Image (cartoon, rainbow over all chains, first blue to last red; front, side):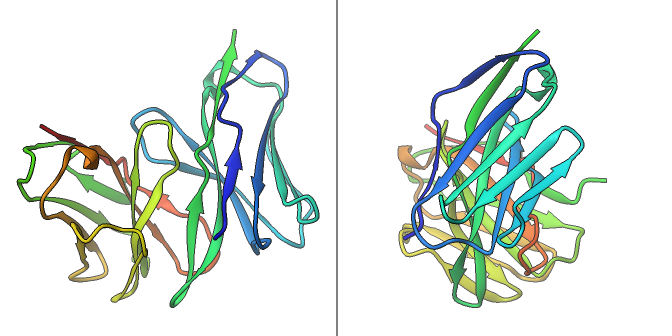
Length: 114
Length: 112
């Protein structure tokens, strides 16, 4: 079955730097890959979706890349701010009876220091 | 403004005492999901519905059941909660395509 691997170690960076988070998957390449932000005690919030035929997607300070050869997505936050501190989850579609379902990685915790 | 609403935010139950968690949505989405998330772990899919079609994950314990009486509401029933069932339970909705999910704030379940 599909496995999603994200770095379990927290990432600590200084304000203003670029944070780069990694998502690797082990099996088939999904048609879509998504990134979510989760704050402590809250539900995940959608950030970006990238399709398999897209190499890169941007939204404001966020950038996602998708490399189906490496089976990897990278998530970048440029000019990071303390308010960006959160857990970032990678998610992708997996086949399910009746269509597709969305499965998640465990996330990487990001701390941005002022 | 809330689009996916979960009640209650915090639920305390006793070992073995049945508990029901609820989820409602105002988005009219045809797909609804229940995830279980333990500390520092991935949200784990328990079930999902495409309209009324119920899809159970193979590793979801029989102790967990779900009901979707209409498009707007979905319930998670835990028949005999054990200590290992203490977790955050997340409800999410989707439009059925490969699109983003909308999550509720979750219900944090404690089992005493």
